[in-house]
Amino acid sequence: MGWVEMSERELRRAEVLAAVSAGRLTMTAAAEFMGVTRRQAHRLARQFADHGAAGLRHGARGRPSNRLLGPHVRQMAIAYVTERYRDFGPTFASQMLLERHSLRVSRETLSKWMSEEGLWLSRKQRRHFHQPRVRRDHFGELVQIDGSEHHWFEDRGPRCTLIVFIDDAASRLVGLRFVLSESAFAYFETLKSYLMSQGRPLAFYSDKHSIFRVSKPQAQGGQGMTQFGRALSELGIEILCANSSQAKGRVERVNRTLQDRLVKELRLEHISTINEANAYLSAFVSRFNERFATAPARTDDLHRPLERAPAQLDTILAWREQRHVTQQLALSYNGKRIILDETPLTAPLVGKYIETYEFPDGRLELRWKGLSLPYRVFDKKQRVTHTAIVENKRLSEALAWVKARQDEIKPVQPKTNSEALGYVPRPRGRRGRTSFVDRHIATKNANPTASAGAAAKRDVSAAPAEAP
Image 1 (cartoon, one colour):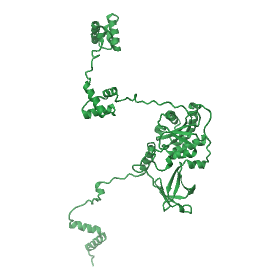
Image 2 (tube, rainbow, N blue to C red):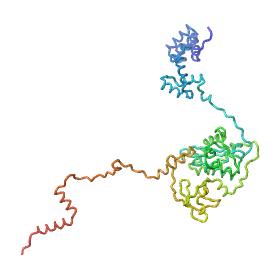
Image 3 (cartoon, helix red, strand yellow):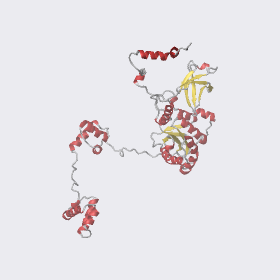
């Protein structure tokens, strides 16, 4: 007879019906074992008796489906996809075939056909494998840095960002700080605390964010460096940018760990503000490093002494730009109009460029050859302008600022069309020509003194005369 292809359910039914034929099992029990009615069990028993186990096979097995699309449909679909929709995915291509060619083919069927013809690769087939990168050998040789935006306080506080510095050789957290959003000033503050405690590493490893890398090579000014890159250059620290997130996987994985463990510890400590969280981080970092940090391959510490005074370090970790001084000793900076005080030092600066130093704490200094210049702010108005370009990682902070400003503005009651056109409603009253009585009453109301005198005169004339 040869081999007979059967499913597992059909094989179990053959065993049960064999037991019924041998008298070891009743038909009622067999129907219960097979999960069918007793009537269906009798039908299966007759098929088993007439044709053996092969009689229990499904009748449609080995036959083409009644809904099978003909070969001409496949040829047409593949021809259209090859000619017009080669770079389309199966879902979009099936929609285009239906809309433009009235050819109905399901997404799954078209995906199978395209895969067989080499026109489509599944996500699993398109997956790229990244070679693992070996750790650096020395502590302080390479520090990976990144910012992780997350609901760190869950529903107890606003969404914020955690700046993370982790050593590549030892997986040791060397810097953590909560900030509103990822910015150059946020990295300046985290970098300052790291440098004061550990010293200067050889290099930092980051992503391609505009804080670390100039996006446009043809950008004017900056000597091809960002503010953070300029600060690291003055400190003698190299900055390297990863080509993918997998390349800096150490900081990406620790971000995922912190989003689990740190969030829960903040919940247990009832912490809901950035200041409270930053105060708690020092104790958390100590426990985290004791548990997860590893010993580097070599014991040499490649951190170098800072060799910078605190005031000099603050000057390096500032946002520095150049501004042109006008004839009125004025300059523009960050939407503000700044006027230099007229002194013997500032008078010769007309038409020249001076340096602006904006510090992370909000202070602004103007300097000329290292000398601080006195100034005053003429226009303090600052706002997020319409169509302003806001980076994705600063969007939460920008929206929070906009919401705070909008809450301060009183809502304006909208005017109706009549009010906008200047319509003033007339007082209600009688319309048309006034009568004699109405005019007399209006005159009387307008001159009450004359009316009172006339009434008194009438009273005197009406009084009876006295007898002689």
